[in-house]
Image 1 (tube, rainbow, N blue to C red):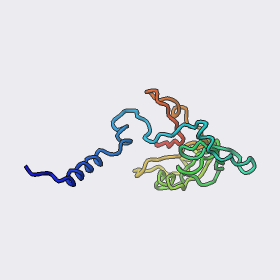
Image 2: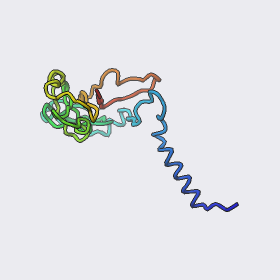
Image 3: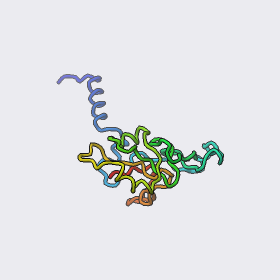
Length: 173
């Protein structure tokens, strides 16, 4: 038998490790109802102690949590201001919507090209603003109510008793 070279074995083991994927990706693979891959740290006293003081009342009409897993408070975006998946949240009663007629609505929200609009008027105006797609090339999406209040079904324990915190909700129709 030929003696195997250590470099060849190292390359083979590295390739196998890369094919398996990172441990985080494997943790939820194949599990039904495994939940989100990215888990937010809790907003406990230690996390809140690291926050800067919230903006003063005259500068900001409404305070909301920062985007993503943020615990700290920041100003909510007002109606008509640009928004997206990674921007500050829209104020209460508003949601981030892609521009009317946008051919790639999800991409527009990912790129921050949405606008805060009155959430109650959105449903009524949607049929008039957007033509019915013949063959959708991308799922229809909105960034949901970005006021920090996620739908009741998105928060709380899942079926397995694991606590979940949902900061951003994307509705796909």
